[in-house]
Length: 154
Image (cartoon, rainbow, N blue to C red; front, top):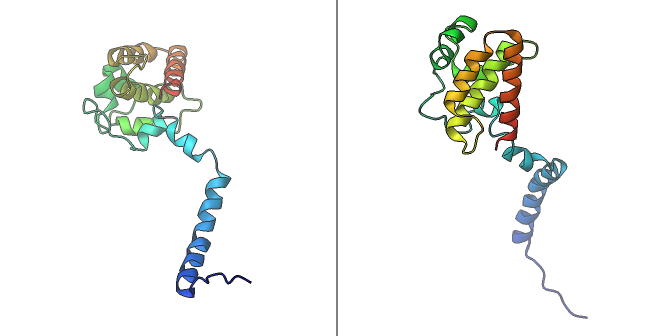
C-alpha cells in the first residue's frame, strides 16, 4: 500500500473554518442570480440618482431648487423649497401626474448632462417641463415620455 502524505492539522483546521464561513455567502449569491445584472441596469432612473451612487453634474447640484432650475411655472406648481434630490426620491407619484413629471424630468435633466446619446438635451427637458405643467393631460404625457427615455437609457 502506498502511503498518502497527511495534511497537518494546523493547516486543515483554518481551511475548514474558512470554508464554513464562506459557504453561506456562496449559496446566497447563487440563490440570487439577477443581483449582478440589476446593478448594471437602471443608471438613468430617478431611483438611481436619488441613491447618490454617482456624482451629479456640476451644472445642477443635488441641492438646486426645482423652481430655480425649471422656472417660475414650476415655482407655482411645486413647493418653493423642493430640491432636485427630493424630486428624484419622491414616492407620491402614483396618481399625481405633477409629482411624476417632476420626478422623471429631474432624472431626464441629469441624464441630459451625464449620458451620451440621451434623447433630450437639457434645454429640451426644461422646455418640456414648462409645457407639461399647463394641464393634467400634458403632465401625464410628458412624464411618460421621460419615463420611457429614462428606462431605455444606460
